[in-house]
Length: 429
Image 1 (cartoon, rainbow, N blue to C red):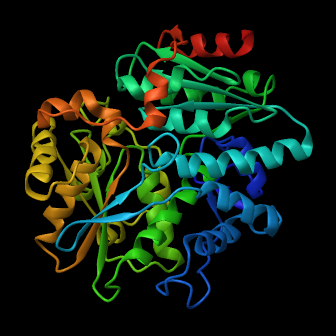
Image 2 (image 1 turned 45 degrees about the vertical axis):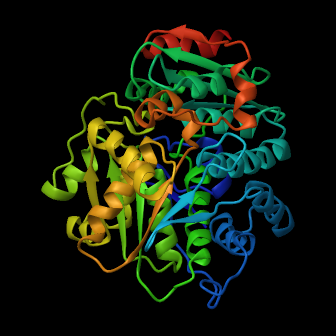
């Protein structure tokens, strides 16, 4: 199967080329020429997530990785649970923080790292992964690629706009992982990365690839846990809605892909903070990119979501079609904090800002639908302890795998939010 650019100028490429390149030469995102359906009887019959994920991966890899190796990649990707927790009647949390860095991006990053490692080692080439992060992407990518031969990783993150634990996870690993602390916003980081991919003088000098959700091997495996959540539901006859805390919208896009492959979903709910580009679009039909606003749900502080073009592609640009599949709600910091407290006070469930927004949006949608709902809890609350603890007036226990980072020494290079600063670093490192 070929992957074409959403800008439809660059030629279609193989899965391998789409993964290695990350971004198409015409600045578009790669998109599969077709989305196949899973074998009949696979969904909804209590099959293991490894079995379902393997069939999903086969659809998109299309033979470019042999089945035995692909099975190993899937098993190593899903080496930890993704459980649903019954928070209250018909409301479930999909906990995606049981991986090594306590964030949902562990799934996509581990799958991407193993696919890219396979392709790089087979052709004995060296690749530099360039990634911008608003929080958890960087740590997941760093962990996934740590020590992988032939691959260096350079992570850009906005100074002062990620949590302390997130920053420690980005900046204390060393080895083949380097961190750049950018004096700007996540949007600045993302813009610099995109400029790098489209700078021929740079790409001629080095092989660049991306580990953001713009890379097909990062966002596609995120569809795995939508199937996992559905299989864990006891009542598969009642309609299901997924509420997805959203920043770059790779996670929600992966859910839409799962739906195309056969997962029964009544509605996707785009849950955002005040960076409400998509909820606004769903109401007005106007896409208005703008500078991001800092919030306590920092991983969603994105003013121009890159995966929106894939959502448009899925729906052939038809607004009515998009509105039929998804709704959007946005929340202020005050509403988010109140949500964290409300969930704890009424259910005893410990959430964090992003998950709380997912919960609030789900409850809002359920006023109009007799469905059961699943909201994605995208990171462990301890990663946002400085936000959650004052809200609840109580300490949040830090998992041992996170505590280890806090004692390490930070190593990061401070750069201006200007592309030339990034290019100079890459060429002279």
